[in-house]
Length: 321
Image (cartoon, rainbow, N blue to C red; front, side):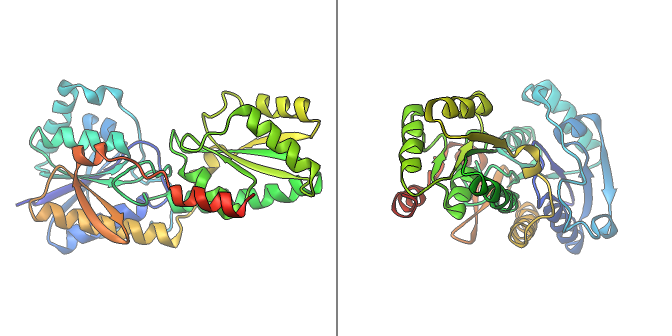
């Protein structure tokens, strides 16, 4: 039976990670387990940045953004020899369970550790919502609300000056942030990897809308759609005669106090992860589907097709035209 559990956060930080850390630590202590934290993700694990903690360690962090455990990326973790160092660090402390909060790369690292004898559970912590085994990941809701707040403000200036404005949001090859925020804002166009729009069509649509009653235009775009969104905005200005600007929201999308929804989701998943480890489960990840906690083998989860939200695309066609 698992007696000592550690928790780490890996990859990009996401609001709600601290709430999840809090839930893991307190649930474990309540069950009589020794609880540990690992600083700086897998990099810190390899370097032995491991600390035993008590209940007070997670006091007053449920509302804090980012991750108190810090995060880092370690490409070398793909190498078995590097992972063996991590395994040795855990064994040195007698730790037999590890909860890893992060994205797909974090999941894969956890599964590889399972194959080397460490009991692991992966939890979805990423603003991008690009993990197919869960409807929502920790941090997505907060990031979405941050985008909506920013677009509300940009809309004021765009309308006042009768401009066309492209707003680039994060997503890392996943269009959920653009799609959900675009629906919430009622923008004129949403361009994502799952919902691409040819450049010529974008330009012609802007021209057509400007000829009608619509004298200002908001377009939300996923990152990496255009190599340089500013240059594309300049092109639109040249080809349409309509003043066009671009705003890249950038890393402000990652920060901020987590929403109530993210705090609740993080807490539910954190508690579930501890219970799974104490029940002998390993090499799995947790998520939420139809508001119910679900579990998958990590390899199975990584192979699942991601929901492209065709229902939302249909809604856009009905109400945003």
